[in-house]
Amino acid sequence: MSSNELDDLYINRYAGRVENPEEVLMRADFDRVKDLSETAFHTEFRQDSDRIFDQVDEIRDRWSGRDDELGAAYRYLEDAHSDWRSAPDTMRRLHEQIAADRAQGFHAISEIDWRSQQHARELTGNGRWVVEPRTIEQARQQLAAAERRDSWSDPAEANPAAAPVPVSGSFAAARTAELSRQQGRPIPGHAFAGLVNNHDRVQEMER
Image (cartoon, rainbow, N blue to C red; front, side, top):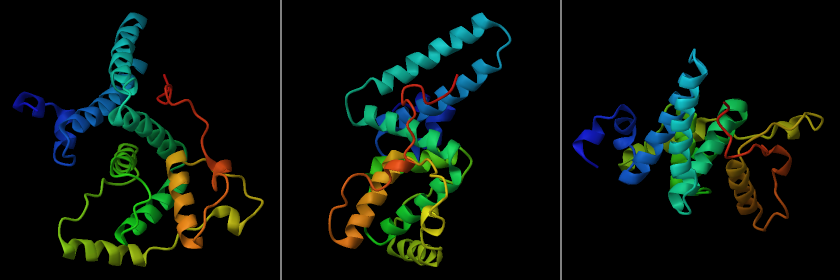
């Protein structure tokens, strides 16, 4: 990554948080797409709006169309961003549980997906991106903080008649893995099938 690229506001935002330079570019472009889309919405003239949306499509397709880890990560980030926007309270509870699990050494989702959850959480104004601890003492402090949090609870357990709340499919899968670990046996089907959003990944950011 060149020094000129580091002068880019979006790239600089993630250069200190992500080791893989190409992943930095992917996350920078995701933010760029978001801001360009918002600009297009408020553009007075249709031709200007169409021109900006063409840029948005070009950037988005560059990443979402890739058949590799970063392509999958971009699509996952679109889903996570949508979920944090539509169901922040539910996502916050699940985020806390995943963070507590990680502090105890259980990694239910991949590192790149966890970074995407942090990314989407911060981008939607629901919390800061928490950088992983680099020392044992930092890890102990985070674990102590996690243990003081209230334990995760499913609203349906307290109120069986409550309507399901949509959550990220990735987080649902992670929670399924957590329940399976606790019970010591596989869970048939999808433990959170009734809670998963059914949105279109390609059209996650509304025009």
